[in-house]
Length: 83
Image 1 (cartoon, rainbow, N blue to C red):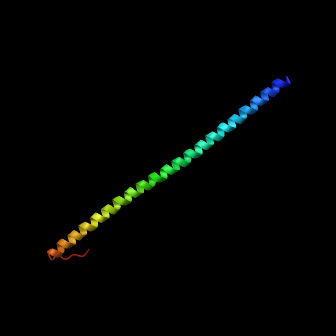
Image 2: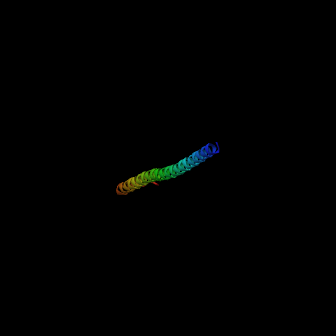
Image 3: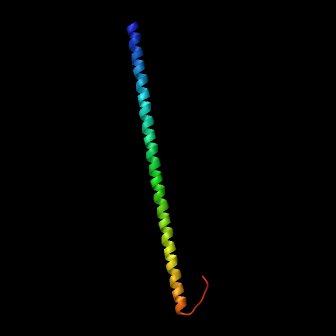
């Protein structure tokens, strides 16, 4: 009877240890997943910000070119306006 009880206690201890190991593995997996997702969202956000900034820069550059061409046209035709 004692041997059976000891065997069952050993099995129970092993089962509890396996559950703890699985929990630790799951926690480690989740922490890695959180790190990967944070890294992904950081890069994605930076990429979107950069795209918007490049679009803004292109629009600003085009606007400056348009203003320069208008000023040149006005200067050629002696048209004076305030900008």
